[in-house]
Image (cartoon, rainbow, N blue to C red; front, side, top):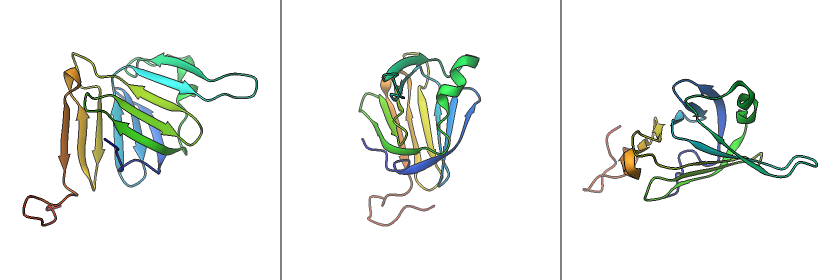
Amino acid sequence: MVIPWIEQRTVMRLTLRDGLVLDFEDNNELVIVGPIRLTLPPVGPYPEEQIGIDPRHVAVAEIPLLNLSGAVCTAAACTDDGRLHLEFSRGHRIDVEPTDDTTSWELYGRRHGYLACLPHGRLRVLRHDLPDDQGHPAAS
């Protein structure tokens, strides 16, 4: 499932409070608490590199690697089993796998709804920007 709410949106701020929180323009917020596989782009003589990060316990040395403020999310998708994949304009990628014991990630869209990966990869989707069963726009 493509997540158009955050595709082509700029990361306005990144914080570490109870996980990794990405605030996007247009009032969208992604909270990640499940383990992250961060892919760093190649820089000069250094090749692309993947590292694992626990967003609930980010080491001081890992914080600069998460500097995504100002980057544009060029691709955002999740699979039916809860895997999340993000790509950014600077070449970074974030992948999050579902966990068995906690919600791995949650996306709040002020004008769109709510999307989350619950334990065991179950997805919860609540959209208020799509027509209801009668073909009328949903109430905001």
